[in-house]
Length: 326
Image 1 (cartoon, one colour):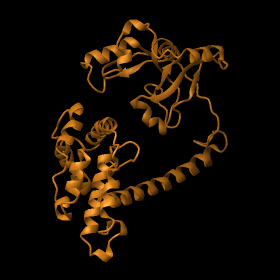
Image 2: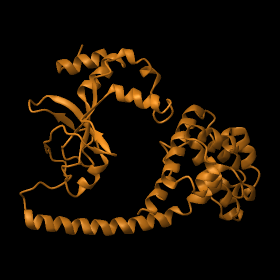
Image 3: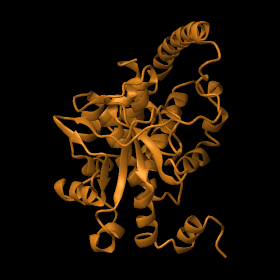
Image 4: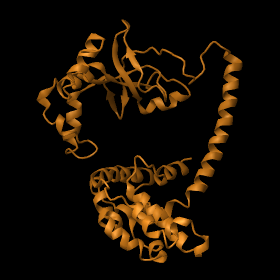
């Protein structure tokens, strides 16, 4: 899965999160392949009578270019993260441009950046489309035909893993019976823990981070993505920078716990669990108290943001009073 997983992640397209240009390219490649067939074997929408309307429907007149540019920037990062800088697809698409420049670069090289050039290109013929140097078309041609085989391999691996999981479950039940609760069956469970630091990259991670740290990261990385903060946070004098923002505790966290309330011994809500540190990953199998930590956002940090940055007065009042504000 080390070889298969990153490729599946990078090659997969999601209608909600990925830029429309990839889907336009996918439709274009499909059309080109259909046009290579005899006319009587093509899908009806690619017949000469319907081809113009099919092409017009491929590219929306009201394409939100700002939104699509933003999605393309994020997807560029995601593809690079999974495939690495030396992958031919990454080199072709981004030419090792920095993350913030990758979307601009790929669009500057693409015929699909506007509808007029798209229509001209689409009518240039199947051979030109399938041999095109357009980065979006290149991505589709290099990835989509490989997906079925990768998905087949991944399914074989996960099916085998599931068998082992089932066998392990039988062993655990044989020895422990009903003395321990089963995993992930939507029953309420409570994990106890204490605030505690842990060894981290040759230093010690603190039990609590503050807004000071957020602004330090922003400044230390020259306010560049992904460390840049939204303009509404640009004035640090609006908040008490010493307010705790996140905290680390010895609660046993695992996938599926995100969003869980964190309460203290007095049953007061003190935070919201959202992640674990890297060492918590093997907590799927065994909890190692020396390093395994649950990371939660501190209720004090949330309230500071709600009240002073987001100005969510009704919401703050409701949270403090424990009832709906009128």
